[in-house]
Length: 224
Ligand SMILES: C[S@@+](CC[C@H](N)C(=O)[O-])C[C@H]1O[C@@H](n2cnc3c(N)ncnc32)[C@H](O)[C@@H]1O
Image (cartoon, rainbow, N blue to C red; front, side, top):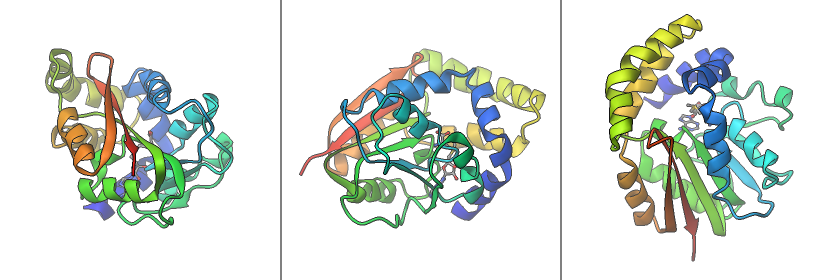
């Protein structure tokens, strides 16, 4: 499946930022800022994993917590094409399940709307653990299986109708928003994901609900 996912992101990369901002009514910018606030207030060498067009790293830079060695990694080359135009260094093409970095390379790993795409979630979190330095922080920003009433109403009632409608109005490809709805439906609940992080030895796992559970930021620390 991962090759089909990579090819889809390559195909939709040109319109990705617009689709993102339109479908979230620009709330993604606020969610990223709040997720970055879960990092300790110091400069970090950050890996923006499944980082795509780099907006999560841009939010970390704006908050003053990303150092100059921070990088975006993604398996879709197309998604990373805009990085230099957005003032970021060129991205590193890499599969999240087999990262080309030595153990203990990064102070922090951010992953925005990426974990949901992985074929093997446990392996993905193990790779994050491996590349984090001891004391490092992993922050996930993600849409999970809805558990709050607001999220259930949105994801089961409104999203399947509104997302294709809005997506079409802004000329986005049907496969992108179909995939978005499907991938949320089959992903973990936030509680399940927090449990998985704890099983993978992450400590001090914190869950922050954003916009009544429409989105969540989850942070965990590598403590050895
Ligand atoms: C929904 S986009 C999110 C992009 C960006 N992080 C953001 O916050 O807007 C998901 C990204 O995950 C990437 N991705 C999916 N599976 C991956 C994998 N196994 N390894 C690396 N990147 C992956 C896709 O290419 C895509 O750029």
